[in-house]
Image (cartoon, rainbow, N blue to C red; front, side):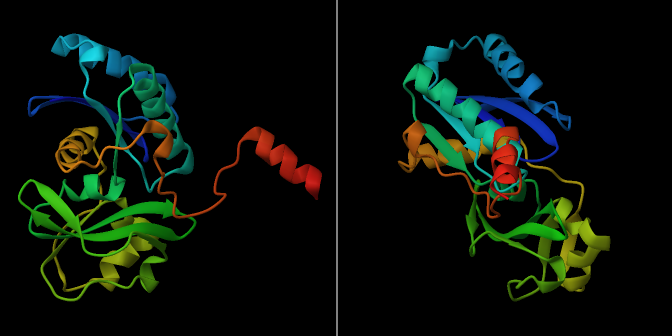
Length: 230
C-alpha cells in the first residue's frame, strides 16, 4: 500500500509517505510556512521513495481539530492531489494522530485552541490503533469533563495552555504528560492505512473537516463582507 499523508493543523508542518508499512516523514515547527513547505516536501518524499503520484492508493489528511487555516490548508492540498489522481481521501483525526505520540493504554490528547480553550479527546490504545472514548470537544481546561479513572497519559500543547490548567484539573490522575507533543503526518499515515483497510476512504468532495469552533478565521473577502454588512 502507498499513502501520502499531510498534517498542518498546528504550528507544526509535516508530510509523510507510507509504502508497504514503511513510513518516511518531513516534520518541522514552522508557523505560517505550511503552504510554502507542504507540497515541495511531498514531491521530495515521493521522489526519495521512488513512488510516482499515480502509484498512490489514497491520500491521508489530518482533518482537525486545530488552527482553522491549517486544517483548511491540509484538506485543500489533499483534495487537490486526490482529485488530480482520482484517488480517495482518508480523513484522520488530528487528536487521534496526537494520541499516537503517547505511551500507555489510556490517553488524553489536547491541543491549545487559543482563546482560553483546548481541543480535547480521550482514547484507548488498541494494538497499532487508538480508539476514541468519546466526542472531540473544544472547552476551557478548567471546565473539561474528563474520563473516569487514573493512570492517564496526557499528550499535547493543551496541557501547557492557561498556566497548565488541564494538568491541574487532572492532578493525581496523570501517569505521564508531554505538553510539547505535536501531531505528526507519520501517524496520520499509519492511522490512514488502518482506516483504508476498514473501508473508511471517502471521495475528496465528501471530506468533513473538524473545526469544532465556527468563524475563528475569516478570509480577507469574508472580513470585508462582514464589515460591509454592519
